[in-house]
Image: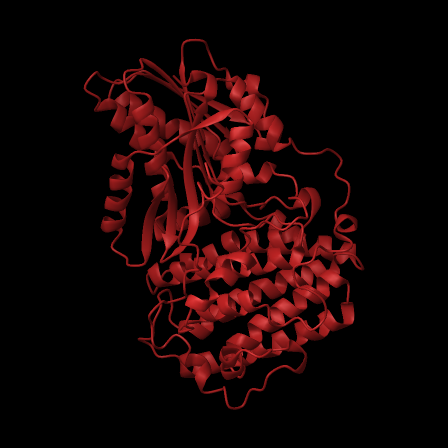
Length: 514
């Protein structure tokens, strides 16, 4: 099949508040007082020239220029960029506080577009500052990372639950995974499910599956769930909830906890037995096993895709403005913004032990002969060797994430801010500031995952039309506009407007295929 078999046809970025006429209004009042940054190089684009006075454009270009200078090791220029950004953020914050309408768009506390851009830019600026300190001041860099690394696990677990409640993406992933497992396990009397979701896991997924299995015409099977997690308290809570549900309905059930990180997993600890029908569910975890991608640019990288679609865009929001700026490549007066870092390898300290390579992990998984493996991953390319491309892709992706979160969240939801800071913000910092073994948020697109899984010996299992209907029905009950589920050759993409943010695909051991 063609190389686009696992690439959705609609790949443009989701606009921040698409079709909202007020999207850039918070910046309009200050446009006359602003001037283009001299070294940003807006080029000959009439649109860019017209928008050059806008603070949003300045922030985009300053962030990208700073990323370029940080990557090139130009400490003084990067420091000057950071100072300029800090000034803009301070000015935007004051302007937003004085002019925001209490009924202005967005949810979660008001403030509208300027506040959202401010929050996103603040996190990216913090990540760039950390990366800047990495080489000259490694001690300061480690000290800055320490608080995030030692965050309260209960607070992080609560924050992930807030994300589950506020956005439908995890609900969709769990629903789709369960539907695929149910269909493949039809008629099986002994079912073993291995849950690799770790920190992303939620007992709600398996409570729903228990109830669905109980409703089978032939009755429920004997069910064993093995959960892999590095938090013993989370394993204990999950075991208690699922065992209570199974006991209440007299179901034959076993819960097997495996205390381990994914990169240290011993497959023998899963205790897979002959005669079991095995299903594996992985939600937002496999990317942590990836090595750095090759330096060669992917033909389907963000920059290439944006260039293909740039002529279709008419900027009416910050998200559209962001995509156009990324696609036109403005803001880099010196050198090409997407060239690999000349010292990328020197940035990464040699780890005391290398994490399990994804090829080895998939080989171990294949040896278990699973009847189905369901994989959910971020639909993004945050694993490129070229730092500036990775930075732009992350800016592009998380702008859409911030947009859908704010648009969906209740106005008074304090949880919304915690999701931005503790969940999405930490992902951004890991993508931007970290290298080597520290960088675990190595997201790649489904097209790359599909090739990797096929090379490992897995065959694609198309997700069913029934699963698609169930996913779309869930979105209807969610009651928010802007979310979509797209089916592309039997794989699902969960989108914010036209921007795919997550993918779900199903696979099985080739030797089990008829």
